[in-house]
Image 1 (tube, helix red, strand yellow):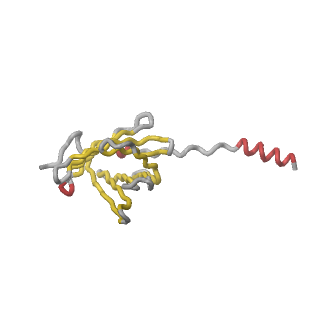
Image 2 (cartoon, rainbow, N blue to C red; image 1 turned 180 degrees about the vertical axis):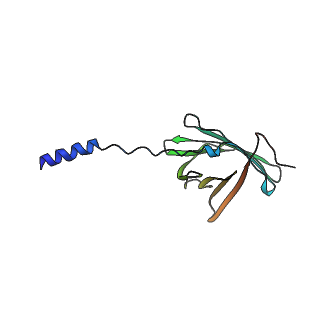
Length: 157
């Protein structure tokens, strides 16, 4: 038996370690995107990935004319491949990738108050985004359908 134990130990040492999970190709997110629906103007920009980092920003003008912003980035964090959001300059909140395919990605953080999930999907020439979660026991979501536009384009007035 000692020989079998030694052989088993040698085989275990030769077994390669599992490869780290590959980061998805999110090149389909890059660009300047505009959503002019529901009386709001939402502009979102995503950079191409460089050295493992993709940077985004969002500028929203509500129907009432109130402006808001979010700085975000997508990169590998100690928690895993993640979307890091900073709405209105708040401290960063990390959403770890929970699902992906060639044209969509989902990032999740169930400990966050709202949202719990951030989803992006490329649908033809459109970029669809959705946040969802639970507020006071009620499922809530917000969706956007962005069109690719030249940098700093505005919604018609």
